[in-house]
Structures are given as structure tokens and as C-alpha cells.
Image (tube, rainbow, N blue to C red; front, side, top):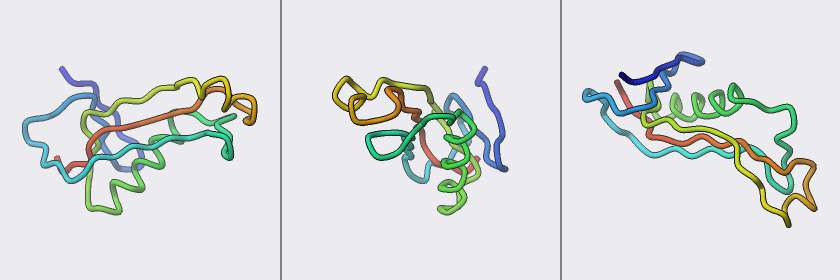
Length: 94
């Protein structure tokens, strides 16, 4: 069974449905030296991914993966945050 949610009209599927027609890969990151991830959450990642999916004619993001990762020691010295949000997968028509 694949876990699925919908956000801003786009289906986010943590798997690869048989009927998925892949359009292009997608990778989003929030945070970094010049951009703060403070007060950001998974909804912000999905919002950015949904906008990009819609722009290329997709209605889903399959093989959806998300989380937080450390920015690394040097980046944390120059940034307000030491953790960045990320999301990736494949924009698709399902």
C-alpha cells in the first residue's frame, strides 16, 4: 500500500503507481546560508512542489520523499538555522 496525501490539488504519493506517467524530477530545498528555514514545515515544501508540478502540467508527485537534514557545521556558523527542509520525487500525471 502506498501512502498518499493531497495538498493544493496535487497528489503526493510515497511510491510509484503503475499508471503514473512521469514528466520530470523535482527537488526542493528550504534553508541555507542566505535563506532561513526557521518556522518552515512540510506544508511549505509541499506548497513549493505543488506549484512546480502544476506549472509543468502534473497532477501528482510520485516517489515523494521529504525530511530535514543538517546544513553542516560551516553553514550553521553563517546561518540562523542548522537544519534545512527538503522534498524530492517525480512530477507525474496519474
